[in-house]
Amino acid sequence: MKKLKKQLLHVVSFLIVASAVYSFTNPQSATNSIDIFEAIKLGKITMVAKNNGGYSLESVNLSLKNNTATTLSISIPAGAVFKPADEGDQDLIVPIEDVLVLQPKAQLQRNINAYCIQASERSPNENGSTSLSKNLNTNLGKLLTYFKTNKVDKSDIQDALWAVSDGHSICNVGNTSEQGKNLRTFLATLTGQENTWYHTPQSRVIEEDRTIQRETVTVSGQLSYTVPKGTIVFDEVVSADGRSFFKSQGKVAPYGGKVEFSFNLRVKGWKKGDYFVKVMKGSEQIVVFPFSIT
Image 1: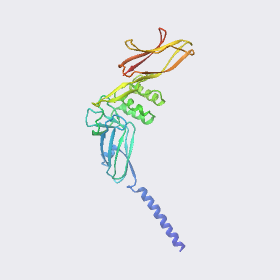
Image 2: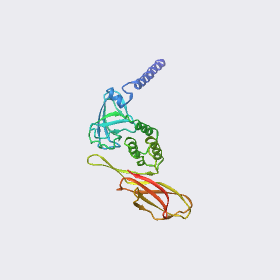
Image 3: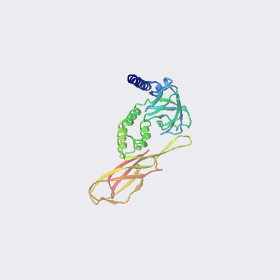
Image 4: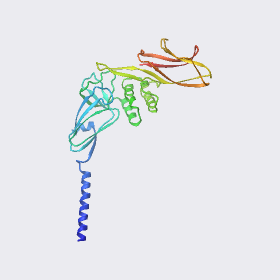
């Protein structure tokens, strides 16, 4: 009797192990990781993509249907580009890989992050259809690799993309955080632009015709100069044609040597062009810091 019980226990143990192995290896329970391009090509998924009417962040709505009996982990790689059916609308690029999990035979709808890479075109029409393609811009590819391997402030992603895709100023990218400073250094090398002392954040508005109007709102940065202790100095902002736009009150340098201060000037409504911050001692010019409003 004891021998029979022992044999039965062995059989039960075998069945449990066999069941566990089958459960682990059963293709219907396994997850298949695949990128969205390959999944569409092989017919594993059906995709319908629509624009949400925006030019950054969650600007594309994806509707995916899993045509297989397997759970699919769908990668939307950095560099995936959504091209609106209307050629006058902006292409949108995925800057950082996204992953969606589709259960067997299930459908999933979700907004994904995609950013404009054609600033002069119109913001995509809401509910407009869009198709999937791949990035062919080498420098954009280098920037996406940077995003993958470095921390980046999310607020700087669009301006960094436009600096590469449309030649916008890298000064629109912040330079106060460590991430911003590193990104600015990278962009300067990639685009050939000067990595200046100042930051020019912009406001952006989508007009009725869906074009994006951009306006520089402030100019800010760290300035430094060297003067003897007790020197009375002031700073003045002038345009390239010599017109004065701002003049501070005189201040006494509390100690001799290098003086540093944070400069922050609201320029909303100012004309585009070149300007200068002149640090003055009486009528004597100590140092000049140029900046541009674009």
